[in-house]
Amino acid sequence: MIKKNCLTFSLLLMMLHLPAIADESIQSPFKQGLTAPKQEQTQSVQSETTIEPPKTQVQVNNPLNNPLNKLGVVWAQNAIIKADDLLKKKKTIEAKAIIKPLETWLIDATEAHTELYKTLRGIETAKVQAELERELALSFAILRDKAELELGLINIEEKQYDKAVEELVSVVKSQPKTALGMQAYDALKEIGFTYEAKLSEEQKTQEIKPF
Picture 1 (tube, one colour):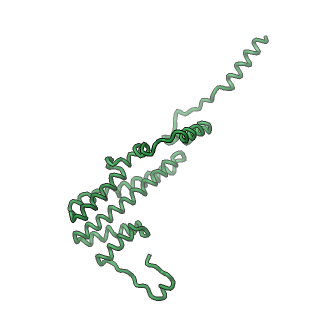
Picture 2 (cartoon, helix red, strand yellow; picture 1 turned 135 degrees about the horizontal axis):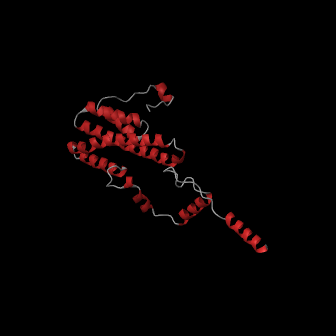
Picture 3 (cartoon, one colour; picture 1 turned 30 degrees about the horizontal axis):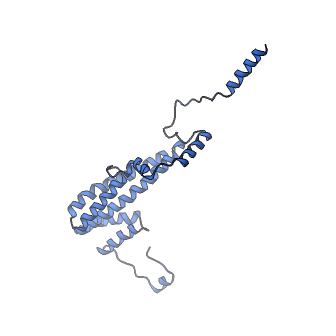
């Protein structure tokens, strides 16, 4: 009887130490890393602290930083730089051949990432991914504005001022308080579409500025 009681007691102890098995047959694709137990999260943080991957590895893992990826930000940035170099050499046809389709793509990419952000932010387990999409939408929006400015300057060089106005105004509307927006507004003044306001003495004393 004593041996039987001891065996039963041992079995009870073993059952108490068995891990609980949760039903995880259906999971959100964004669930990994967000709903792990506290103990596993602590181990993950310690692992990341002691073994931090090199920055170059992080950059390689981001496909949008790959200069060969035509859907990425680095490829678009390099294309804008190339078009600008061609414009400085007065090769407007070659510059426009690069920047026009690029501008169209950047507009579409900005809208696509914005829609992804709006969709994912409503999913509780996708908050981090939604924030990533918001940042990507912002990055593509900046590149879109740069491409629009470049196209506006190309149109000015080709004396297509009406087309230039459309591109330049779009940049000013998007970035009215940045250097990029001011560059577009200065270009509008140079072609005679607008001009610099002259402040009265009263306005000067009140320190009212055009922007």
